[in-house]
Image 1 (cartoon, helix red, strand yellow):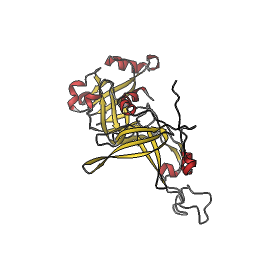
Image 2: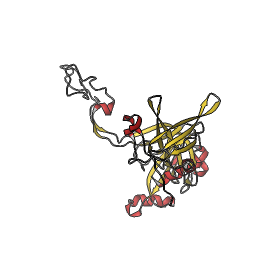
Image 3: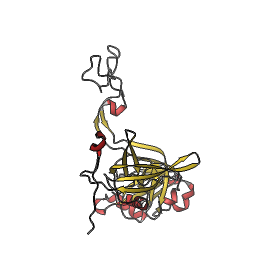
Image 4: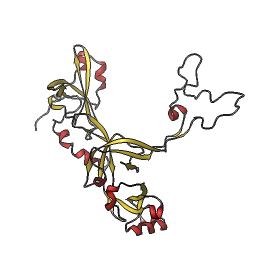
Length: 121
Length: 200
């Protein structure tokens, strides 16, 4: 990235780093602010992170996939979005690639991701 | 280019432009030149790469050689006091947040392109009814025995891009006065690190 662009993106550094460090394969619960007319409420979207794009830029997004009553639903969130209230990291997954598009073709047990067990030293 | 979120939560694509400091290298007026204009220069340049006549021109204004020299006709009167020879014009003197500016630049060169990309022709339309090798062709370029020639200006394939393009009404979202940076909404013509002219 150009040095000058960093001047702009530096301002959003806090917005990017206020969330826990998650990556693809992890299960997260995303709290999104939704405005309906003048009212504001929080909606939760829980699922597996299948990719993070354009990391460490203002354009960074992540995709969360869940299976809702048999239908796969994916939602893309910009990470600096003011609508993002909170991201809870529920479970860390053990995966071997950065983009988990292979999950789209799988159902049930085949779509399961092993949990990453962290051993304390 | 980058993107920021506006106050109402919208993601806005925007371009960062280094707008200055520009040095006034010449002030033209009606008496001597027949019209009012201000000539601004921007970007450092090595003296060994500058033509001798230009070095003299910059010396007159008391500055180092610059890369780009642009003349602005009828520069606004409100800057009259500030546009003396050799003075700097900086971004937040001219622009305010919320202003709408026009950006002029040279678009990216696309090479030799067909009529579909170059002039927005629709192509032949379908792949059936006997078509097999002319999906993106221009079709007819004129009638037959009259006029028995192709009219001038007929839109055909050729070199595309590299033209002077003006984009109107880009909103100034933010100004960084200490670095002379301007954040405008949308995109501007040309590749990264190219020159653009901003008009208000």
